[in-house]
Structure formats: C-alpha cells, structure tokens
Length: 405
Ligand SMILES: *Cc1c(COP(=O)(O)O)cnc(C)c1O
Image (tube, rainbow, N blue to C red):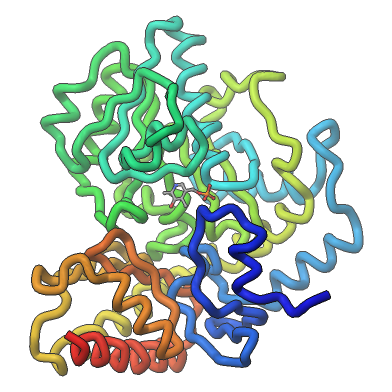
C-alpha cells in the first residue's frame, strides 16, 4: 500500500468537497494530530458532532462492548440498543415515538414525509404545502435541499418536489400572510446553523406554534445542529419552551458515530404505519449503543450546566482579542451555548474563511457559517486549558490576518 496522501483524495473522490491539506490521524479529547504529528485544538467538533470530544473512553467502551455482541440485524428484528435509545429519547423530551436513521438529512426526510402523510391521512391530498425559511439548512437529499433555503444547493437537480414555500426567517408578518388551510407542515431551526448562526426569536417560534395549531399543521423543529446539549439544554426547544410536533436530531447524537432520530408524539407517529417508510441501517445496534452512552453522559446537569460556563470563557477571550487589535473585528456573538457565531464587522465582511485558514495554520480548527461569520462548535466538555490554548492560537491567527491586510 502506498502512503495515503491528500493528493489521492483528488485522484479518487468526486470533487464535492475541498478538505484542508492536512489529514488528521488521531484524536483525543479536544485535540487532533495529523499525519506529520502536528497537533490541533478542535473548536470545530467535526461540525457540531463530537460533543464529547474525540475517542471518549465511555463511547469507546459502549462501541467495543456492542461490537463483540451484535452489529446489525435489520428492522426485520428489533434490537436492545435501539429500543433503549428510543426510550431514553422519549423520557428526556416531549416525544412518545421515535424513528431511527443514520443522518440529519434522513431524519428530516422522514419528518417531511410524515408531515405530508399525516395531512393526507387526516385532511386529504390537497393539504400538502410545506413552509420553510430562507438560509435554512436541512440536509442534501432532494427533498431536504428543496425545503432548505439556499437556492444554490438545488441548482441543476430539478425537477424538484413541489408545494414548498420559503419565507424570511424571524418574520412573523410574512408567516401570518403565508399560512393557509393548505399548509401541512413548517420546518424550522431554533438557531440556523449553516445559515449564519441566526437565533430564532421567541415570538417567531411562538407564532409558528400558534399558526400550526390554528391551521392543523405540524411544527417540525430541525435540531440536528442545536440538539443533544449544544445550547446548554438537551434540545433548544426546551430553552424556548415551544414544543414542536416533530423534532429531528443527529450530529452530536452519536458523538461521531453516524446515527439520527426523528421524534414525535404517538398520535402523529401513527401516520408512519407499517410499510410507509424505512431504512436498512436505521436503528443499527452499534450506532444505538454509542448514542445511548452519549445521551447518558450529555443529559446530566454537570455537562449541560458546563456549556454556558465554557461559552462565557470563549466570549471573554474573543473580547480580549478584539480589544487588543483595537479595530472592532467582531460584532455580536450569536447563537447559544457552544454553537457560536462570531459576526465580522463590515470592514472584514466576506473574509471569515481567511480567519479559518489562518487559525488552521496556527493549530486551531474553526468553522465558518457563510462568508461573514466565524463559527465555533467545540466539545461540550472541552477543558479550560484547551479553550485557553485555542484562544491563544486564534489571537495569533487574527494578528496574522490583520498584519497581511
Ligand atoms: C447538518 C445538518 C443537517 C444535515 O445533516 P446530515 O447528517 O449532514 O445529513 C440538517 N439540518 C441541520 C440543521 C444541520 O445542521
């Protein structure tokens, strides 16, 4: 076998990604090491996935224990880890029923199909309109890019599913004007993650809830990015105290092992009757064993309460970096808990990726959310020393971007 190199990525993979030039080979907690042994502090968390850091001993234990017992039986048979995970999700949330699958897009696909099918069962085929929001992101399947609010993700993939209306986010008036008896479901993120770390206002989510009730439509909350402790609440709807009819969760759910779920009330779930929907791998025993262990660890006061503390430590560090530069780099810091969107001020607008690249060169992994927002989604249990070291590296990265200006 030849040594695996970054050039081989371009040689063998379709070109839909353009990964960084270094290849990580090992991780531990909030640190990663690449092929050359260079070390990185991880504020990216594999895009809000590695909520317990890398190679968490309890997740390794759950995975290896299950790996020695049973991996997969398909949904022709039930398995213990899947039932146990579904039970935990119901006990921790509003939900009474769960559909297990493998990715956020798949969970949203299930939610959207359920939204349509529930309306079909109760009101007939004419009630088919889905309302969604500009800049929303719900996955990359054809249905979810159609519901998502970024037109470029749909380009060239038509014909697309129909009866989908996109409205401006946080605009209650537009919502009231668009709702009708034809509306069957609304899909919304509590905080738009990919769309720039934009927080929904409480009034907006409350209006969606109220209008869904009035028009017999289902409120679907996409908590793929905000869920599983990310905001300091197990799910963000608990912070807003607006209860959806359907909730989707993925990313942090498996702490890095692919697993996702769609949660709903029993009465709503009835519309996914026998044979209506499915997934071969969904509810896979390995994935569910890991997710069950991750949920047990994250859904504790220690971990959830630690999220806001860590946010405050990062915010303080960012303010200090900004003050040192004395040029007002950052505007507001959006998001909640450890889903943070650091908005670049006008003079620096459009240059988020430059900061990300400079940070990587200094040994810090970051994310962006569009051209103007530096996004951070570190582990929920990142130690203070790693936060401080990450911030020190970020300070050097900021200096180098400013110096090259
Ligand atoms: C990442 C994300 C998805 C898609 O999840 P995949 O696992 O990539 O399919 C859907 N919705 C939101 C809000 C996300 O952040």
